[in-house]
Image (cartoon, rainbow, N blue to C red; front, top):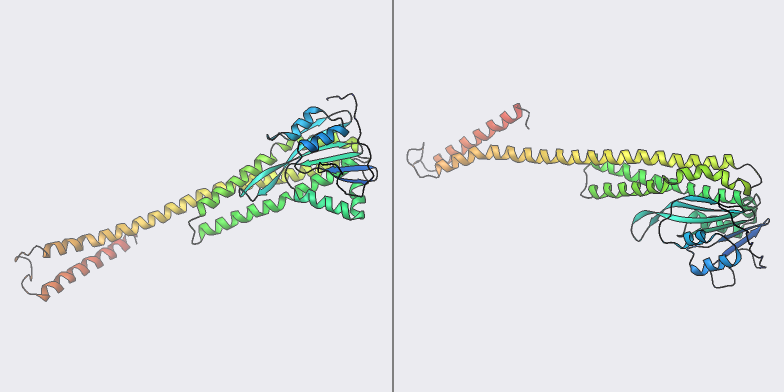
Length: 331
């Protein structure tokens, strides 16, 4: 466990509930039951400097918070606080893809600081409820910073399931399209849903060992036993992972099924073209004979009768070949 010589607490500021700090940095604050919750969305150097003036966190933690490189989910535990890094799925409308949104957290005995790198709807919704409703503020904040952190992480995991439902709906739609009339975008749709599953797995998998350690690290910041609460989060993470494993197998199976369906349709097209070629070939042969202007051919000098005779032979040959193809089971 890393140690710091001291932990400088932020000085209390007399301000309205949920109001932003008067300084330039965008820092939102709520105080209730001796607990301070600070929320800084997309922190920049200005917000980090503001925090460094008030709280003596480790410089590496500030460096991780400012870094634009993807950090691994982790828990850095110190004598008087813990620093956590988590990722949650977020649909980026700009790229049209599912991406991992990072949230960094400082948690101490009477302090919780959330620093999401991207807007997270569940976090913003919980902040608004605590800011505007006294009953929600009491429910979330009267049990300490550890319990408030549990509620935030739990809400973020609950938001993961609707995203999973959308992926499942896409897989069902692809399956219906494969066994229905099909469409030209199936290959692209399968590729997109596979990419979403891969990105989701990249978000969830590294957090599995981190979540198992979280209850031990956060226990000291809550007055009651949080083991059962954080076990519930671990269960949700495992359920999400199991669903992703099933979706991964389903996407691979749908891809193989679609390739088989395309191959089957291609074989049907080739079969029909081959049958047509087989039927037309003898007809072309008869037409070529009668186009040679040779008197030795039957009824060559009888005008329209010779034409009808040639056409009759062609129809008989075509009918005979179709009948033969049906007997062979080729049609």
